[in-house]
Image (cartoon, rainbow, N blue to C red; front, top):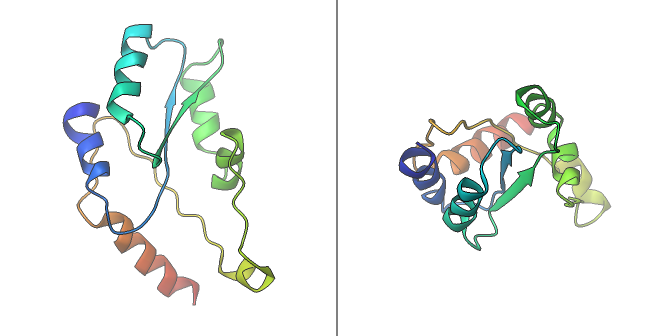
Length: 120
């Protein structure tokens, strides 16, 4: 489902920059991890997040329900405003996309527009 539905729909989002955190745990076989790495390729819009040895659904739920800034810190990304006056404009948009879900073309741009309107 990831290969057939989710990944193509995320690849189709070309309007605005984004980062998709793809969470996996140790229950995913090495063969499946290798295939996932190949599917994601070198696309900088994807970050593979490997959860710990004792991880499972409960730990995954814990991680992807953290505030977005904390999720990004977990993968070594610190987002900061370009300057002090931008700090009020800094917004994080987060959504959960399961392996059997897809995004309509233009969904990221739509979210940016709508949330930008609400934030004004």
